[in-house]
Amino acid sequence: MTFDNSNVRRQDRLLKEERAVALLRTAEWGVLSMCDADGAPYGIPLNYVWDGASSLYIHCAPEGRKLRCLEHEQRVSFCIVGNVNLLPSKFTTEYESIVLTGVAVRGLADDEKRHALELLLNKLSPHDKTVGMKYAAASFHRVEILRLDIATWSGKCKVVPAAD
Image (cartoon, rainbow, N blue to C red):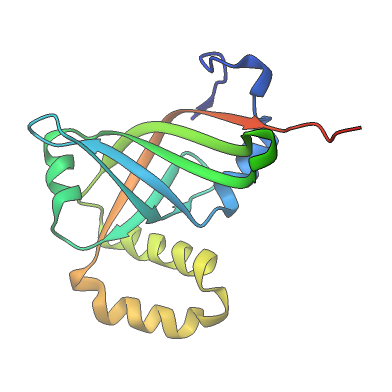
């Protein structure tokens, strides 16, 4: 997984890699963008978890539009937005975001799916993990786990200096 800000148009707004990693680790959701068989775009907000290396895991139902899109094209984009501060009197917004590109993989082995569910519970429901693991085991047959193998990613931010 390569963090590469070289293609960001506004080089004066680069998000430092350390902050991008923190955002990747802690943000609760991102938008998965895909194209269907007719080339129509489709983006959907989803919870995710980073494996700490080069992949994200996303859980979903075992059927639906997202999976039909991925049958056609496995290349995807995933956008995560961090802190946002609307500044109406200055006609601008402070923000931070990262954009990842990669390949979505389906058909994971059961062990990897269980591991992904455990990672998701650790991140999103750490105080209810015991109950969550029981719930995950009971619904395991009706859950799909996608692994997004990250190829490249970049980060951008805007900070507005305080008025003197």
